[in-house]
Image 1 (cartoon, rainbow, N blue to C red):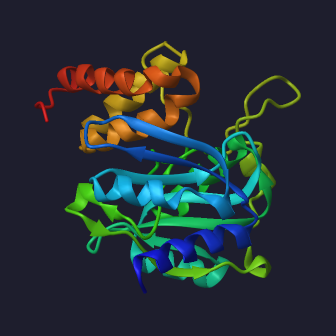
Image 2: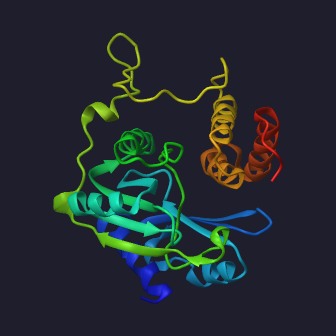
Length: 261
């Protein structure tokens, strides 16, 4: 398939799953993030995206924030696992580099808000060996049909697409209730991991600091940590997000003893 065919296949899969609006993000080589939010799927600015990608910018997409969507995201899923999951539940597998794992977009039986998508994705990441740091419910994935400059300019391709409503994933009620209070006001955990915290600091920035330190200690690439933090913190920090993310990662690298990039 041509690059444009991969893009069309991915977008058609999302539409088949019930997504009709998307947020787009372009990360330029200088680190600046440019956004197009709440764009209708049929009129995405492809000329702008392709021009940016030719100029070595990375191109990302997600279902538009602020709405419930029947689509779940998993990052870094092994190819064999992704294909088996698609066979059982349908979905879309996007390979972001020839030797790498997949982005997996899974249809579910009903629309889920951002918090519920986060709970469902955390549960699925444990089941399928996906990246546990990429389950925010608002996560950006790469748009197929564009080059991944972080991996030397390789193409991001649709590996397989099987959006079948009859096979859509049913997320157990207990998973969605995992972090909601019970009748006694206590949180129900159902065995799911607690949010990352930095000591006793449960503020958003404190929890993000703890998450960044953990990811760097685990060996995650600092550029990826910055990208993940930008996606997590944008709704709270707006145009300051890029500076905040880079500064946070730089300070955390000093704390955990990682050398500068």
